[in-house]
Image (cartoon, rainbow, N blue to C red; front, side, top):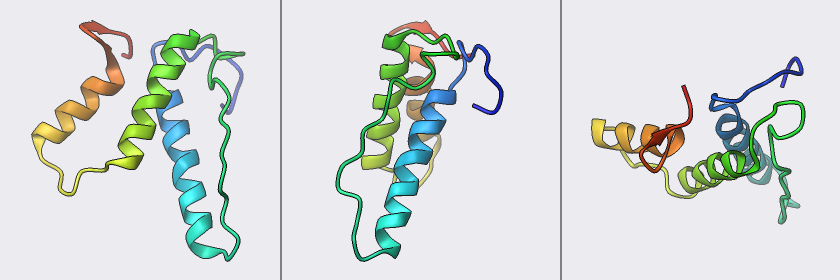
Length: 95
């Protein structure tokens, strides 16, 4: 977070989690002693004001997408990805 403030209703936690996982991957491919364990806090729940459940949902979506990236992008993959990030069940929680 560049400036402390509310991030409720955004996908910032998803983006930050995916970026952190990607950074670990890049580090591990470039170094002889890889990072083996990563602990991530409940991102966005402090000054960001995001609910713990929403933070966890977005972090889980980022982890799933990190582990299983699509082999090719098509509209079905894009729609599924956006639904997983922006909706909790049928309720839209991210603008």
